Every structure is written in C-alpha cells, then in structure tokens.
Image 1 (cartoon, rainbow, N blue to C red):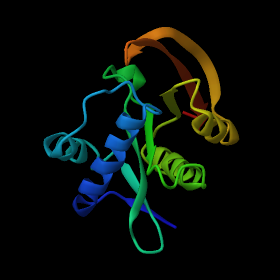
Image 2: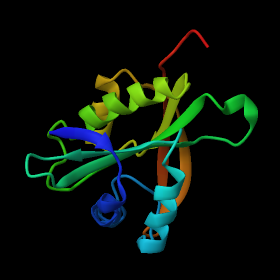
Image 3: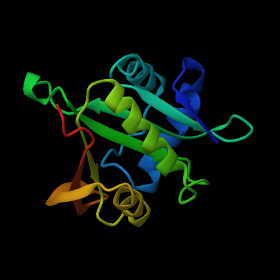
Length: 166
C-alpha cells in the first residue's frame, strides 16, 4: 500500500469513496451525494496546509483518502485541524485507515498543527478501533446531533495532541 498526496487524477475515485460513506451511513451526517463540482472545490481547498492524502493498493487503485480540514476560522484555532477519513467499503477494517491517519499526523506536524480533532458516530466500531489504537481520546458525545433517515444520531468528538510544544 502506498500513501501519497492527492492529485487531480484521483478525484473521481475519491468522490466514489466519499459517496459510499454517505450511502452506507457510517461516517457522515451528509445525505446528499457529492458531485464533480463538490470534489473539484474540495481539491482546491486541500493543496497547501490543509492536505489531502490517498491510499493506493498494489495496482494503484485508490482505496481510501484522508484530509486535514479547517476546524475554525478564528486565528486562535489555526493549530487545530479537523480530520476526515474515508475507506472504500471493500477495504474497511484492513489497516488502510491506520496508515492514512498516521501519515496525516506527520503532515499535520509539518504544517504547524498541534492538535487534530474528529467527529464520529459512536456506533462506528471500525472507526472507534482505529482512533483508539492511535490514541485519540473521547472528548464527549453530542446527543441527538443530527437527524439521519428520520432518526436522531449522536456524534462523538475526539482529539489528539500531536505537538505539546507550540
């Protein structure tokens, strides 16, 4: 498996994997599938400090992606990045997420982030296993944070300090 920065040629596969996450209801409160315009805009926002990464299998197929996103536009939060991570449904639970997240932490340090945060469903067992293994700590649970398919959904906030010396 190879982890590298996102390139324009990857966008259709990233879009497919993101839409799988929406359809499968395991990783996001999004309900509307993304389109090419959405992913083109995402790509432009993930060229510099807010990096995007892809995981490729041995045949160079994209099997997952991750990104650092802005957490908050206020200056005091410039060292805090929000993590997104999506794995192709055929490769979930096979270590792809761990490799992506470890490399994303390295990229975060290289871009002067000191903390990463993420928001996940408490019911996402694969995600919880990954985040716990990489020492993200639970901050709390937002009860009834959204409505998905007519039902309330809780969302767990997690964080990891990656640099104590800022």
